[in-house]
Image (cartoon, rainbow, N blue to C red; front, side):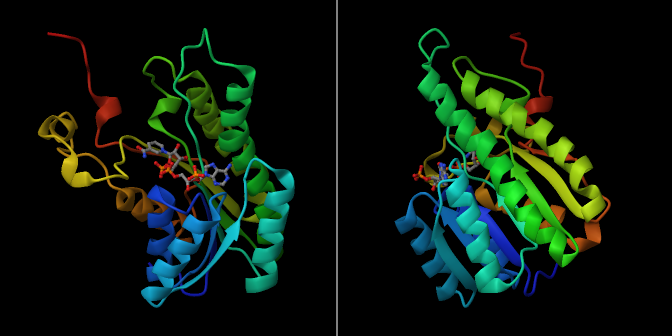
Length: 248
Ligand code: NDP
C-alpha cells in the first residue's frame, strides 16, 4: 500500500493507538497531522516520526470544541494544500455507576467521542470534496455492541459513532468520500510484557491486541484500491465478541 504524499489527520495521536496510526502512515510515505489536546505528547509523536525520516506536523486541538476543529482543518489545508484521510481516534472513557454519573461527565464523554467525530468529519469533508474525495475512519469500540457494568456514556458514544459512520457514508458518498469504522477490542497501549497468560489465552486469537493491529487496518480501509468499502464496521478484537461466555 502506497500513501506517498497523501495528507492524513489523526486525532488523539499524542499517544496510544493514535500515535501508532500516525507513525504507520508516515512510514508509508504520508504527510501526517498529529492533533491532540495534549500538545507536548503531540510534539513527541512528531519528533518520533521525523527521527524515522517521516513528515509530520503537531497541532493542539480539543476535538470537542468546534473552533479548535475548524482551526485544525484550516491549518492542515494551509500547510499541505489538501486532505485525503481523517482518522477520528481521540476518545475518553468514564467508568461510573449510572446512579452516580453526572450530566457533566456524560456530556464530556459524548462531546469528545461523538461530537468530536462529527465535527472533525464535517470540517475534513469540506476540504476532501474539493480534492475529489477522501477517506474517513472512525475508531469506535466493541463496547458499542456489548458491555461491562458502569460504562453508559462510553458505550452510548461508541454506539453513536457506528450510526454516524453509516449516515456519513451515505451522505458523503456522492462526494467520493468513504466513511468506515473500526471497533477495537482490548488493545494494550501500556507495557505489553506485563500482561498475564490468562489475558492472552482468553482471546480466540491467542493474544491481546497491539496498537499496530489497528494501524494496519486503517491503512487497509483508506487504501484507494479498497474503494468499494464504505459504511463498514471492522471488528478487531481477537475474536472476543464471537465467544460464548456461559459459565460451565
Ligand atoms: P489513550 O487514552 O491512550 O490516548 C488518547 C489520546 O487522545 C490522548 O493523547 C488524549 O489526550 C487524546 N484526547 C482525549 N480527548 C481529546 C480531545 N477532546 N481532543 C483531542 N485529543 C484528545 O487512548 P487509546 O489509544 O487507548 O484509544 C484510542 C481510541 O481507541 C479511543 O477512541 C478509544 O476509545 C478507542 N479504543 C481503545 C481501546 C483500547 O483497548 N485501548 C479499545 C477500544 C477502543 P490526554 O492525554 O489529554 O487524555
